[in-house]
Each structure stands twice: as structure tokens, then as C-alpha cells.
Image: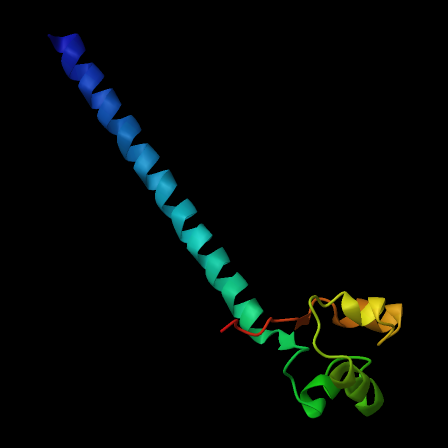
Length: 106
């Protein structure tokens, strides 16, 4: 009888410990997801950004901004290299700052 009571207490402690360790992990996952969404919102869309917006990117001035606009639409940001719009060194500077969003199909 005493053994059963002790076993129940041990199981309750283990369950409590598991719940306490799972809660921070769930919170961390939500924070990481929110951070990823915020980062995606900060990306410059090469398919819709203005020349001024593009020119604010590192290594992109007015001339490259105009080339980017003339090369639209892009299926992916890597097409900036594939279509010889910007040099590889410039692409390396902006690849994590841009996205090529696709127009919504009707």
C-alpha cells in the first residue's frame, strides 16, 4: 500500500517535470516562427519593389534597380544571376534581403 502511494507521487513529480520542460520549448518555437514571419515581411520583393526601394539594397544603385525592373517577372531571386542582371558579388550581398513573390493567379 505504501509502495503504491510512493509510486503515485513519483509519477506525479515526473509528469509535472515533463510539463514544465515542455512549456518553454513551445514558447521558443512560437518565437522562432514569429521571427521568421517578421523577417519574411522585411524582404524586398524584386517583382514589385520601386526603383527607389531596390536602390536601397547594398550594392544596388539606380542602374541595377532599373535592370532589375526591366528583367521582371522573376520566378526566383536566383534569376538575378541567371539573367545576368547583377554580378555574383552583388547578389551575395542581397540574396538574404530579397524575395521574388509570385502574382496571385486569377
